[in-house]
Image (cartoon, rainbow, N blue to C red; front, side, top):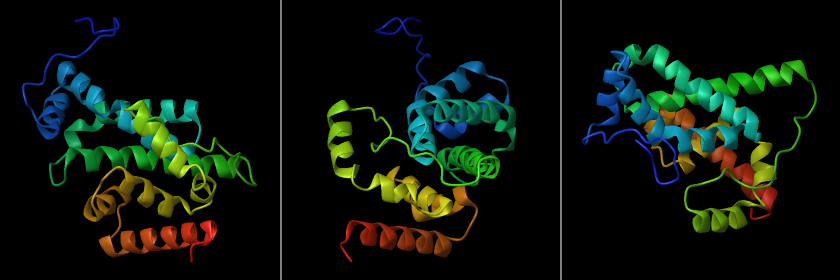
Length: 191
């Protein structure tokens, strides 16, 4: 089916939940998988970009997360929301990539742009970019797990969901968030 701009769009999910689509993808239902990709592609890229600050790497790793989703959909047990399970895959890929990149090239990582990842609504994105512009250099200097916790919170995940993604306790997530916010406040001179 052709979309508005000639792009392929998956058929309507008929109100199926992400969890139901994942179960179908585990049974090798390509349409269900395509629907999950359509639902999460923008968010996955945005989260990967926010963690990596490199458009090409974010594209590659968000695509790799979908490959892993296809390969491991059968391991989704439904004990958490699909989004939590999928973000865990994506965040782990990004954190592993950052560790590997640091090991391969000691010293500071190159600075990315001072803007947040692209969003869906261009007006909201511009407003958010302007508000976040002074924060990104400080966010880039956060410890990887603090940064991940903060970015997942910006994606509207609950503390419990962030804990599931990062494979730690909710108390640890709160500590990561507290330390991240304290560091950002100091960097902005608001403490």
